[in-house]
Image (cartoon, rainbow, N blue to C red; front, side, top):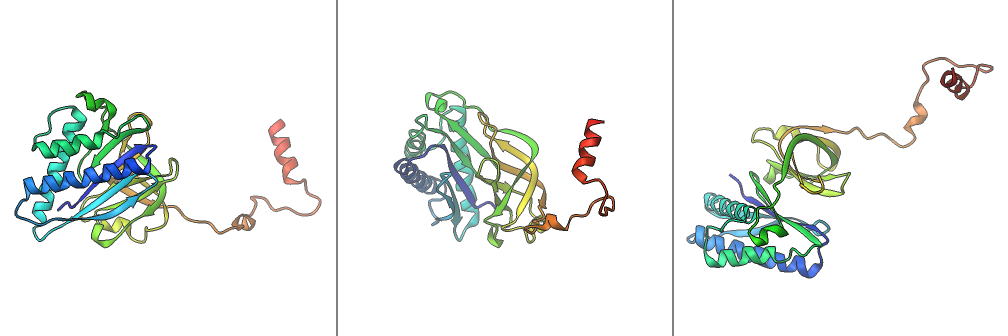
Length: 250
């Protein structure tokens, strides 16, 4: 049962623009909740918030989890409509707040991402004019970084902080594969799977169908001093640097 959704802003995001986007994001969810699950109270709680990357992940809580999933499915449809330049299939108010979110695309903020545990849609400035935006590119690959925000209540997803771009990447794996994440929190790792990349920069933004999480062994400082050579050496023998130089020049 999915209960998470993400709004991410890429580019140079000023505080007032981030606040404006969050305000419209909240009102969009309120309108979708009224339209899709009018009889149920859903509380949207901040699950993760990355200010430096303008990524907001919310978790829906309700006595009827299926209604949370229904609203998240509707959120996916809104993202799909914005990315494809087609009409949003919901009420006037839903369309209003969805388009308000895209209004912050100004050149410095280059794209907006609607993401859920199953789907993601990238909206660029072109979509404001009803033109289809470039889709996220997927391919098998790996991302190296530090595993963050791993917890029992989010046992089907985690975040790796990409060491190359210094940005968070949401990762999703199938139910029953939680064992892959044993003792991984806070450690450097290489995660392999189906990676979704930003079409213009190639930056990884999501990993789906995680296949492997390989922990990178950390070495102690000065451990190189314990290294041993292949050949024995004694006083009077040729120094190693001369041996290397002679072999190179031969």
